[in-house]
Structures are given as C-alpha cells and as structure tokens.
Image (cartoon, rainbow, N blue to C red; front, side):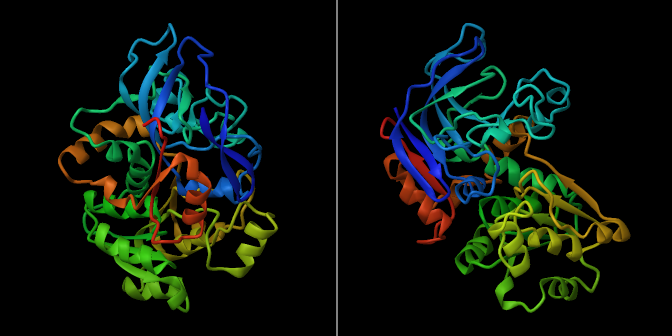
Length: 382
C-alpha cells in the first residue's frame, strides 16, 4: 500500500509499505478515504516531539471503510463507513470509565500521561497513522463510529480531532454567558475553539495570531475580533486595555510549542530544544486572563519542562485546565451540532491533495503558503 513515510525533520514522502494486519481479535483494518494533516503533525514534522522514529506513518484524523475485522469485533462489519477518533482507547480501564479516552491506561501502558494516539510518535504508543491507504485500528468496538448517512465525509473527518479539540477547549474554559474569551492561535483548532465559544454563551471572542490570512478567515468563520500580535507592542497590555483593565474571563492556548512571538522562547524551545517548545502563547494566556479566570490549554507541548510563570498562576488565582480531547465522549453532541447546522466543519478545508503528493502538502501547510488553513489527503483508492 501507499503511505506517508517520515524520514526525519522536514522530510516526508509517500512510499510503499506493508499492508496492515489484524494483530488482535479486537482489531479492524480500515481503507482510508480521507485523512487530514493536523497542526499537531507539524510538531512531529518539525522535530519537536521526542521519539518520533524514522519510518513512521503520521495521521490521527481519518475516515474510511471497514475492510476486515477481528473475531472479537461486534459493533462493526466490512463495508461500514466510519470516522475514527484520534484517541486509541480500550474503553475498560480506570480512565476510560471516567470518559478520559485521551488518557487510556491500556493503549499506551508505558506512559504516565497521554494514551495511545494514531501516528503520533512512540511517546503516544508508536501506532502508525492514517495518512495511508489502509490503517490498523485497535479496540475497534470502542473508538470507530459509523458515519450517519446524511453526513458529508468532509465534516466527518474533522470530527475525528479538530472539532472535538476546539469544542473541549471551550468546554474546559467554563465559558458562561457574557464572558470575554481570547483564543491564541488561528489555526484549525483555534478557529473551532473560537466558533464553539459562542455555543457556550460568550459575548465577545478575540483571536490572536500573526498570519493575516488566518485572521481574516477567523473573522469570517468564527465571527471573532482579530488582532495581529506583530502589530502590537505588548500583547498582554493590549488585551488588558481591551477588557477594562481586568483581563479576559477565559484564555485558550490553541498554539502549543511551535509558537512565534518571542526570541528567547524560540531559541530555547524551538532551536536548542532546552524546553518543550516555545511557550509564549501560554505566557500570554496566563498574564492576559483576569484574576480568578480560567486558562484552557489544547496546544501541544513536548513531555519535558517549560519556563512557565507559575507564580502568576498562584497569585492571580487562575484555574488551568488541559487535556487531549476525549473524542468519543463528545461525538454525540457534536454530531447533533453538525446536523442542526450549528457547526459546519468542512468550511475550514482549503486544500485537497492526493496522498502521493504528501510531501508537497506538508510543505504548503508548514510554510503557510497559498492561504492554507486545513489540508486533506485523498488516497487514489478513495
């Protein structure tokens, strides 16, 4: 089969790889019909995530058709069209029973934090992902969801990660009617977090980024106020002045370790990798939120230390909430939001690229060329 093949930082290509096999009675093999490149994949592509091994296939956002199931699978059959959450979850462990599918204790037993994730380095279990013609799906009775007949596959593929992550970012913010919400990052997750903030009753949504085309997209898609931080002397001072000197009720970090905007953080976290990425967006969130406010973190950072102003967190009485989105828990309400037209995820798709051209797709997305917001890979077999 054809699959994306990681050869080192900034080096990916489409290669022939062996077909996935049923390795456990609860496995399924899915023929991929759509697979996204996620902003989180760029952390891998840029060499920001430890133990990302040469030869790995990325891709944790995909939909497809069930080709084969193991003898223990009861909920799926060949021919079913499914969306597959990016979390690999057993459904039975202590954390899955709490709805924390992103923290499954069985799918990534050597980790003390995150559960298994498709195509996301050996720190997340070492599973190959869906930027391929076929993919092995463990715990097939738990994760995959049959796509409703009425749903567009372009909407379905975005329900595997980006929509649930944006929604959970807003949910973790504890947004109340009348709140002012600031979202750092106008990538796909930031766009969905800003859009979903309105569902929780926000009265004002502000998006901060440095790419003008993404800010314009955020203005139209998320109906948000937008500001380019490169045109602002001090982001924190600007946001304080914009919120009656109090600060925002909720700040959402939808950027993570690949942030821009601070030379020292870039040098230490991105260039020298002495900390787990550039944490400037998290600094801005902590310092821009009001006393007693909430900071919600869905941006990806590596599993090592960062220079974070923890004293400000303590002295301001800030609540910090963070996690990988528990997709399975959120899907029923998100599917209903799509059905009712409250969310139109496919509007963020700007590029459809053949799987054979995966290297070009990564370059365009990483370099923010051609107005790229969200690229989708289409295998020829689809």
